[in-house]
Length: 534
Length: 105
Ligand code: HEM
Ligand SMILES: [Cu+2]
Image 1 (tube, rainbow over the protein chains, first blue to last red):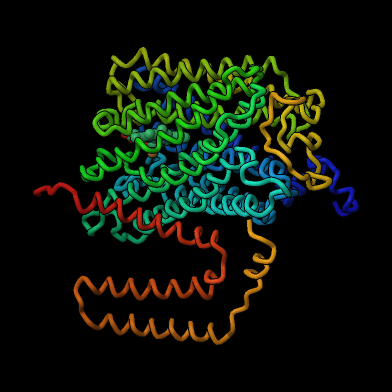
Image 2: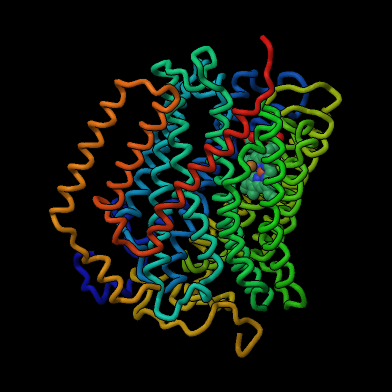
């Protein structure tokens, strides 16, 4: 960059400069976003392959390809990597980084160097987790004591890697909070902010306030393993359920760290492709904050049959129902936005509509699980597995794919093949449902999760589920090829291909280094669709 | 959100050395107290006293050394919210630990 004048630097597209080092040392929020995007996608592929192996083992009763221990290792790797290296950093670190400054009319985040440091910390955490694979853990991603204290596998390195990742998450959250408070363009009042910003803000609060608790729990676990301190060992006066309390005090809010940014994406995509102002702007905005608050009150719904007191179980079951309210508020408002809209089923919209449909199934089955009497039977069965995948794939990942297709022209300056994108979507949608819907039925029939084998009566539904995983895999493969091909062969993207009113579309594709030649003056909210020229 | 004048005021507030020294002396005195108290036995109140002294010390550090006293409202909200969460974590965990069914061995 040294040989350009400042004025030139401002107008050079951010992708222009080549070379690995120029990327790894860049404090441009857009470059950092792309690095996150590539990193999390790599881990998504790795964890996805391990999932295909898991499903292959479950194709038939008896041993198919791996023994029981390897199976345990595979699902631990799958869960831990998907959660901590893909979906938690996920949309916030990738699209949040790219979009927050652009959407609020700023040149970068508040602390650009801290932002780069967060990315390096992420890499460090990822590296530690990869090193732990020399003796891979077999505890599941939840690390419950007492097994995580006793197993001979390398729990310490894995949890330490997650501990390190936590700092990346906290610092990113902090950066976003300050950015949104301090760097909004003139006229960009709180109630004119795009809803993706509200979602990112709520997520950032959760990242800053919840993550320290998992850091502490993992540290206690490591201390117990290394020094034999009895935090969780009853023989030494500890309490094994205490670990679950700590773990879920973070990990329930964490499921909202995963989903809220995706909800923000949906709030952006739906109005653009229905050409209508978003319905219930304030309700959607404040329900994000409500979720960020209420999600701290429900953690023990994961522990109903852990031996926790019945008093606590009853209280938490009641509180869990509350969290469904802000979630439902959003779903109703998106549906109302669609009503009588001029709907254009482009690929981002297809993924957004899939989100609404699948996330509703996932959310409602969450309410079944939150009901104490039902959960006593459903806990630790495939019903829970189906629930979490309906919210995390059907919700977060559909939102992630919607974002990928929607902002792809802006990020890359290229267009992908829309027809292929739709075909890929069809495979993903069908494959997903064929994989996971049978698991609801298997769960109600009593098939437990986390076993490498099952009795013959569960065969046909498992077979169906495994076949579904192949369809899903093919769909994602086609999608990836299509997006990669677009980079090289795609047409040049116009500045605003989808005719959006949001600020990020009012700068060139790809945006220049400093985003805006002049900081814009905002005079209206971003959802004035269906009027005037829009 | 905050007006320019107000922002400048919060950034530029200068605490006199006298206050810093005073707070430091208080912290030292409190340290002596918590060590001294450990020689007496108040039963369950041992922990209450220890935590009370520690809380006062932490508050002094936050208020003066970390400048919380001179910050605007939003900073206070962010500083106090985690305390609420801590209370929540402890409070709701109590609904488990203190109410478990008694199992005879
Ligand atoms: C309406 C909102 C929701 C409710 C009421 C709800 C309720 C529940 C309950 C009660 C369980 C525990 C079931 C058991 O183990 O017996 C559970 C598990 C789970 N939920 Fe949800 N949930 C909701 C939304 C979400 C969202 C949005 C996500 C993530 C994006 C999510 C991710 C998970 C995961 C990962 C598990 C399984 C954790 C494990 O044991 O490995 N849930 N949910
Ligand atoms: Cu939960």
